Image (cartoon, rainbow, N blue to C red; front, side, top):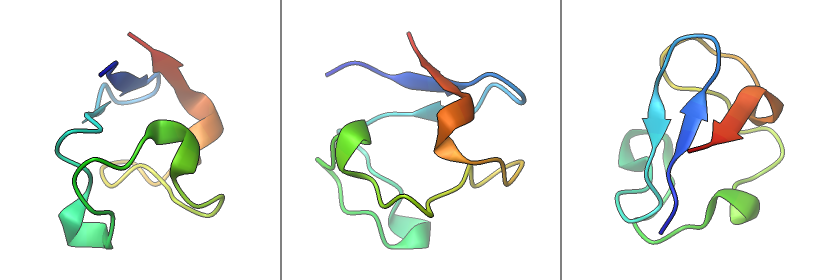
Length: 52
């Protein structure tokens, strides 16, 4: 699976890991994240993320 990087702070969203602290199950593809999901580090919306 491809990782996605927050262009502002460098946080890496890894679909295999998900974001369990924010209710995102492991295995959740980036495209399937809710529209209101934000970077858990800096709080910016997912549109700021770039594919690694």
